[in-house]
Amino acid sequence: MPAKDTAASSTPLSGADLWSSSLASHVPFLIARARALMVRRCNQALRPLGLNVRTFSLLWLTTEPVPATQRELSDFLDLDPSQVVALIDDLEAQGLVERRANPADRRARQTVATEKGRRLCGTAQAAVDRATEEVFAGLTKGEQAQLTSLLLGINRQKPSRA
Amino acid sequence: MPAKDTAASSTPLSGADLWSSSLASHVPFLIARARALMVRRCNQALRPLGLNVRTFSLLWLTTEPVPATQRELSDFLDLDPSQVVALIDDLEAQGLVERRANPADRRARQTVATEKGRRLCGTAQAAVDRATEEVFAGLTKGEQAQLTSLLLGINRQKPSRA
DNA sequence: GACAACCATTGACAATCTCAACGAATCTCA
DNA sequence: TGAGATTCGTTGAGATTGTCAATGGTTGTC
Image (cartoon, rainbow over all chains, first blue to last red; front, top):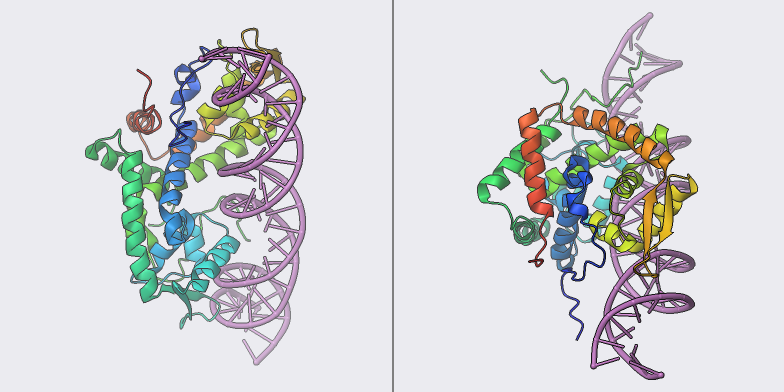
């Protein structure tokens, strides 16, 4: 019986141990790989809910008290504005978020989660947390916090802003 | 005069500070964002050389002393085997790598960098290192080493393997 | 020698990224 | 006030990437 469960391969075939290569400790490579792992696990956890990591992140942001414009969302999520349009279309079609007029600027719009969206977001957060813990199996809680802090240091490079 | 230099936006428009949202400290999000930053910078640095992060990583591995099979490369790079085929095709067309027969197993093939490939890889490594340092501007050398170590902990989850 | 498993490859398809352009609304500044 | 530049959301196209199924050639098993 062919056990096609996770991904634990077996026979190494040739004696090339790539984890001892110099690339294996190269940060861009490690980040890309960790992200791929993370995204796969999270998407897998979110699929039953009709979400993926991108719609999930967006939905999460729409539950914040101060509604953001789509421009702010695309900046923060590091996505092209056109992608945000499609993602919100998706969420809106599912009745999870609403586009509201922005009283201060009629060009911009506020995207706010519906009650249904908030409930689903909570469920999704729990699912993603479980998936994340699996990926973090090799790290202690302290190390996870350390990683969060370091990644924040990379991302929060707001050059100006007094 | 419209200064369209890097990406340092200005007017926040609405008062929504998304960096104070709970998503901002969520690790899957932070990893995805850091990776996007890193990939963009590195690709930008590699473009003049005719490479990108993926062909570069692959080229790097082919300079290792023990040549790996394509299956091993795809496992290590976390890519589908079919993608590795296309990437090697690309590198081979540029005369950077060679596909050689595997004496031990005629199904498998060894992919080895040519002399031209090795030279370019060296240049590319220097370019990528510079790009990486920019992204790491907010981190000390010690923190960078810490990050490397933590990411290794996530990636090196070989379940079995005595 | 039949049969399962494996490697590289091809092809198809969805998802994602990137860029250019447009109408509507706002801002700037003379 | 009003012309021109800028911003917002949106649409559309095209390249890149991610995922999956199937195939010919090869190897290992029994």
